[in-house]
Length: 263
Image (cartoon, one colour):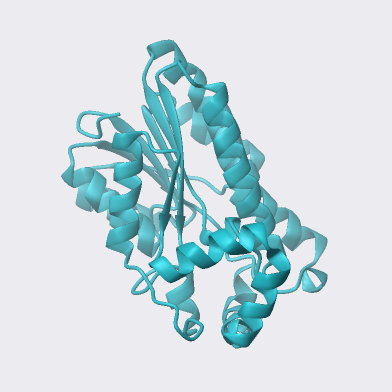
């Protein structure tokens, strides 16, 4: 799927990683539909890039449907928006739990469902879902986030099979710890010992590469994290022991405390 000349709906566009993806798409000649909850930040980004802003709260089901209607001409969906959803699930209120599930999982699933029929009819399109390495292996204090990202990965691979032969591709892009912008760096936490980070530019480039190459899964992380997540997916008990020894608990406690107010 070519980026140049296509119309792209990008969710979570006003965030750090979203802004980087938006700038990359604009540079590649895409017509941008950018969406997020923060009207002022969204309009500023849209003015800079010549994009069309659509303010929407992905935790609101009516807003998700309205967004799909207003962005009905999109050739490409990049579902980037997500809530941190860190912390032990027993600390969440039912309302906070529902909001995490709505934004991180239901919204990208529903947007895919609502936008894909037009793409199928046209014989061309792409659905790119931004997941996380946390969708490959579990971590402490991340059960809710793991649930949404595991679910998103499963949905992407299943939907890709359903749409095979229609001309519509589906990709899951899974970053590891991202520096300089995004939820991890905003928390002020440091990664576990021996684990390196990636840049927002790497995430943006991987997303564009996944779309243009119609790649099923792209893991944007250093080798040690890609290997660790692959092993962790096969041997979760071993992964839990390795994470404890590497100091993952310390990192995740830092993240939880910093993100507590963003549920």
